Length: 324
Ligand SMILES: NC(=O)c1ccc[n+]([C@@H]2O[C@H](COP(=O)([O-])OP(=O)(O)OC[C@H]3O[C@@H](n4cnc5c(N)ncnc54)[C@H](OP(=O)(O)O)[C@@H]3O)[C@@H](O)[C@H]2O)c1
Image (cartoon, rainbow, N blue to C red):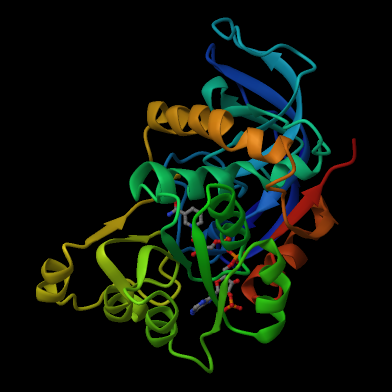
């Protein structure tokens, strides 16, 4: 099959031919129609984020497509089903094998190709903002990187659950692009202080912060939290080590949590996939939440797609398509 692999020396992507993946008795084999590009793929290419499960160095954490074969112990899917799936790697390829518990149906009303934009962002957002940080209706969520794939999903899902949403982004264009998704407070981090803006608007600050910046924002994130606030760090675009004022944390009875989806055990991922299918898919099917797609490119333009994320010019998701 055709795939895109990482040249580890040059830190570039190159098309290659490789054997089709083998699938186990609990796996399905998918004929890929589209693959989502994630920031983690860019970091993997740069040598900063190896696949924790090993295997060929083919990036790609999510795909959509049709089931081509099922393992002996798989009963919930059959050949021909149109699905999308959460992967721990290998999505930039014509075929991928994945645990049947990490597969989701294509939500009604979403084109098969566009469904590749959903698994990674929806599982990340739902598991962190709802299952871990327990965002409740009426609370304020602050999303850093509001124009990211993650950000555009977080805004919509939080609004659909009747929370208030504030976002930061690095340009007015990005803020204007995401405002219609349900943003009530749009903060340009290059010109404004998000701590002040959050306090001015909400009084207390953010109940939950979904953070992709890490070290650079840690102190200010704790400042921006409301009493009993929860800061969930899911990205380290601004570094990994910082000082934490525990006194401030204690005074607010606040929590700082860090997670990664990719490294979770299979069973945990399957539980997240099941909850996302039950709780988020109906919101997509009713039209309250939709994939935000910046660009669709052919598989062999994967390098150009990754460059869009690296340059932070994309708003929402960039997809690689393999035809139907
Ligand atoms: N832990 C997990 O399980 C998990 C799962 C999925 C994703 N993530 C993380 O979530 C983040 C977003 O992923 P994605 O695929 O949605 O990426 P993406 O679409 O490429 O978005 C990244 C965003 O980060 C902003 N950004 C880049 N560098 C920044 C910096 N130094 N300071 C502040 N903002 C910066 C950019 O927005 P501006 O132009 O506005 O700066 C950009 O929109 C990544 O860090 C990724 O690793 C984590």
